[in-house]
Length: 292
Image (cartoon, rainbow, N blue to C red; front, side, top):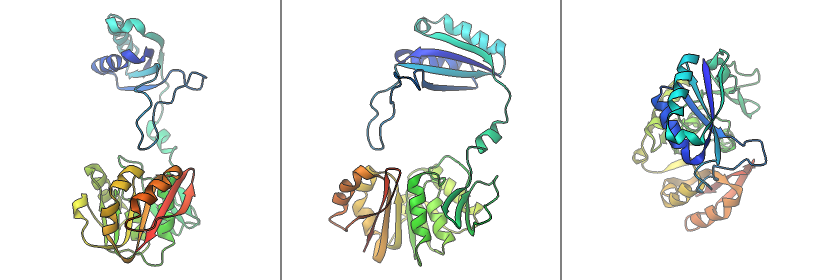
């Protein structure tokens, strides 16, 4: 495997990326060429906010090829293009062979929710102290247990004596719905606007040997004893009347995906329907709950 490494200004990045794709690169990755220096630039905005800019001033572009000859030919073709005049070549080098599957797996380890409740990838054995386990591998949908918002929701689920009928709105990987099933819920609807998330939920439920219904949001009907929504602040505000309409008398609404600084916005959005309280906080994220 050979890696072609280039430095590219922001205004030529799209052309360069398209060209590398056309020249049959196995993969193309882009990062800030000035990362870890005083010139490093923040590219991504906070959740719910637009990004501060479209791209870095200078990008480090890495393209992988099967052989040095292919990488050399690709470079020759690039150097003949007018847009490449502003780019420069950093390296054309051999990449050591690695077990990429094992390397990827090594980044995901069991996650503790409580001392007895763990999220465990399929290639790991559960810790000896684990009494309740969700088996979950990284996938296309959000929710592996590593993010504070997911952990806070799962901790809430683990603390409930009775969950009743459950709605997981914006289910992602289905991790919250599966957690509810593990803790005794038997009537569970997991819904998402993303079809890949619905499929991911179905597969993960099967792997964990739990029963639930997964589908698009129009599948959610009636009221639920527990309504869970781990999304982001903006959609949670828009969904306030809908989510509250699904909460049964005596039931609970659990919201996450909210930054601590957004608490007052959420309280205001839900004020016509209920009183939201902050019931957990971790790494700048909060969990908010309400009781009907």
